[in-house]
Length: 139
DNA sequence: GCCAACGTTGGC
DNA sequence: GCCAACGTTGGC
Image (cartoon, rainbow, N blue to C red):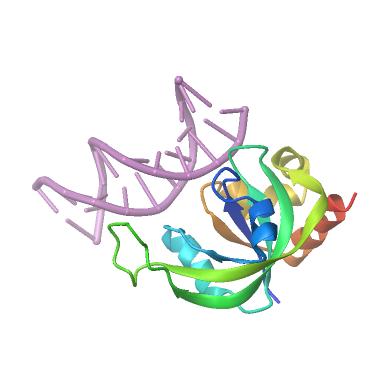
C-alpha cells in the first residue's frame, strides 16, 4: 500500500473536522503535481494529514475510500473536468503531533517531500518515513 | 506582515 | 517553445 501526505489549513478544514464528519471529499487541490499523486491513490492507501499555517504539524492518519474522480470546482472559473478529488476517512489521530521543526531536525525525515517542496499539497511518503513519523507520533 | 520559492501565464 | 512577469503559498 502506498503512503501519502496531504496538507490542509486547519482554519479551512482540520483533522478534527475530518473526524467529526467521519470522512470527506478531499477537494480543492489546484496543482498538477498534486493531481498526479491524487490520481495514483488507491482505496486503502493511508495518508498523513498535515496542518499548515497554524501549528505546522502532522496530526493524524486517514485512509482513501474512493479513488480520484472529477472535482466539480463549484463557483470557480475552472472546467469541471480539470481537477480531481478523492474521498478519505479518518483512521486515528497521532497521540503526539509531529511538528515541522521535528521533521526538519530529523536526519531521515528532513529528506521528505514535505520539506523539499513545501508548496506541494499532496506528496508521497516513503515506507521508512511513514514508520518514523508514526513512531514519533506515538510518543 | 514579509519575503523566498515555485507554478502559471502570456508575449515574443 | 522560451523566459520574464506575475500571483500564490507557506514558513518565519
